[in-house]
Image (cartoon, helix red, strand yellow):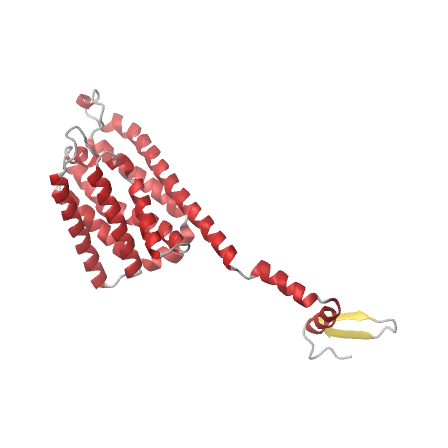
Length: 286
């Protein structure tokens, strides 16, 4: 008996030792009709291979929890590594007159912050490198009109925040990191500009308008996603502005606008540009 014309042959012997050749399709049809296996196997296949709404929601919840955990871990690592870098730089760079001061010098602070930001966010990108290459990198493009609008929006918000802060200044005894770094000298200020205008917008937008926003958008509506990512963004800056309501309100407003830009432009580059222009304008006005 020729086996030509048969795909995936199943061969076995009968009592008369005659070779019988069946395709797997024929074999499955015969036995599924007898034992009603077809519906059973279809149900099993559907449950285990075809995604449904329940499993999709469960995966989205897991992704959201994981990305929020990454945000918290990044904040903790950022704080820890800043302290470790300060322990390293302080004996090397602090002047003898500053040894009795409770505050580090501006140069030590900005170098420590720079090292901590680079370490923490590089680790974050390594942990989420699949998202970084497949989703974040393709979004690093935008129409020039969106880019100009994003830059202008950042400047407008910065000017508005500056005028409000002039009417409601922080307490005289409060000192923030920016003012401490600006007082140190040109080198510390130059590093501060690079960190706040280049590093911080890129890395923070990757975390908040990238990882967290996309995880929220897969589970909730656009408004909830924008609002929740803005709240997490504000919470990330609690250490710096916890005693100053204008600063916290500004971060919340900026986070909401950045999320709106991310959604409207369908680009991550627009929030980065807006964030960078906001930071640059704040530095120029203070």
